[in-house]
Length: 154
Image (cartoon, rainbow, N blue to C red; front, side, top):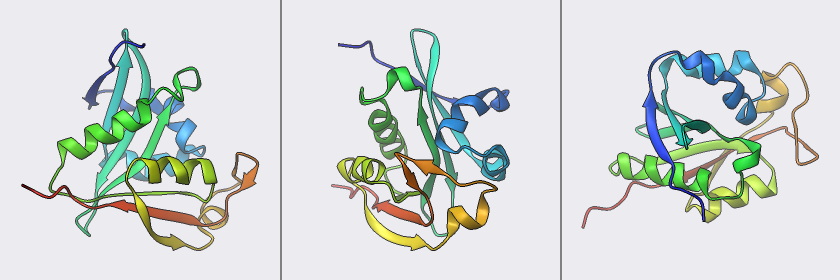
């Protein structure tokens, strides 16, 4: 059993989190398109920063998860799910959306966290990245969006 993680909003020196953000989005100039306008959540365990989640507030009323990444040695321990739950609890009145590549393991992660398929942006990865993005051996082409509605008030 692992120790509990602590999750904080980071406002200072956010560029120091680029190495972690590159796990979730492997082209730095793409990260800088959303980083200045995002709220950056950082998960720590024993004083070590082990995960990040970059969140933006979109004009359509949704919160968008632009990037979520967990250090490799801490994956498959529920940390990503815990971060998503933290975001959901922090903003219960807003729906959440996330865009990802069409990779079964990643899409299944979001579905298990309560997201449902919403839409697709054709050729997103092939049009916006300067190199082929391959995840789990799959070349990414389209961005697939998943949404989670806001929590209903009881």
